[in-house]
Image (cartoon, rainbow, N blue to C red; front, side):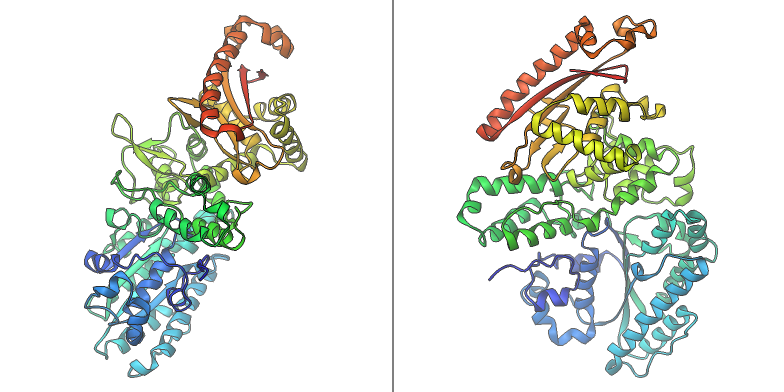
Length: 595
């Protein structure tokens, strides 16, 4: 039977009833029970948090007791259930349904409508189990919640409260360009509605019928800003045992792929093709680490993985776009961080694989004020990028500092697109970029591309960013000009033995039938002073005249020698299918390109 992948589906009951693919994580339910009564679990957007809440909801719901075997019998928890199974009334809220638009009064009203709607559904669903209906206050849903607990307290059972995406609408408000920070602070500060809500939750757990709370979200910012209102929550985000609670390991991806390929032709089932696909998946989707245990396997983004497999099992070919557009909005999160004090420098540094971002420790308790203080170091900004899923932990440097990196090629694309948008803001610029890059892809001709980079990119690169190494500036601008993950597997660095190619464009396996070339570029830089330029006259030399200058010729020779070694290795790895062109370039004074 063909595998049904639950792409975009976060309903555990539907997944089980309709025989969708499911990776069993139910053994963590017992761990969650023992971890505490009020828990907060953070992961990036679209990382499987809602499905996990659905698992818990189905497991603890007393109205589903007669369906336990059907839903859980063949899963890990079905073989060793806990004593609390099917013993709770369950109320599930989803704050992504709260409208973040309008003033704080409008947002407050939207939150109350959402909570009241969920309580109304609760009342209908549990009607046979409740001694009376729950009276709702149409204006103040917090009163409705108290009324719900009064009714629940008249039964032998207690309430389990699930809050999905607790910080969703608050984050949307914060990132808004229309009084975003002001409105956000009104929601979380003082007697703001978010802080008030969590004060009610805290009080309700003090013997009023609310027994357990499980909360999901993206970052700790909102919780930090309302902490005095809800200082009883235990954060389980970075505990080793929950590292892969959401997400797939490489071994699981290999197993899923093997099952998927059984639906395809013999050609796809060859080991070489299978390894090729795994390499693609690792490059585009792998790379997340959510715990301090560096020996733990990295995890794949589950939404991206299911997006890929759902397409592949239907058509037995790669999707043209490896980026699921549902995650593309994360570029707005990067843009928001870049707009914070010192944020631009931190975001740009993430592209620097020579000197990755480092901090002493991951910040786990910081609010909006910490992000807005210009005198603060980069720790809060780097930590926020980590929680957003656009940076991940990669180990420690020789001084014991945590190092961070962009997790995969899909996320790197979001960084590049943000930078490209800031440099190429008009239709004409984008059209010209497409034209010169396509010439380079298919012919290897550097002239039009370098003319474009000199005229458009080098001249607009802001001076405050020249704290980067000059080679990094050049690499980044070529990455911005050439990035194309629909045709290439590309990165700012490709590991080749012990050396590195500054920028590589390796044709995607499914694109080798087209007239594209593989490319490897090596960059060098010279200051005008190194050419003996004491006046502006040398800046007027032609490219050919610059190429003849001994310092330039020497740098080109060094780059070409490196490329020759890289070529030998790449030909050994890729074999006859490789159509490699190598390019040695020297940038003079961050003004002129010579090759």
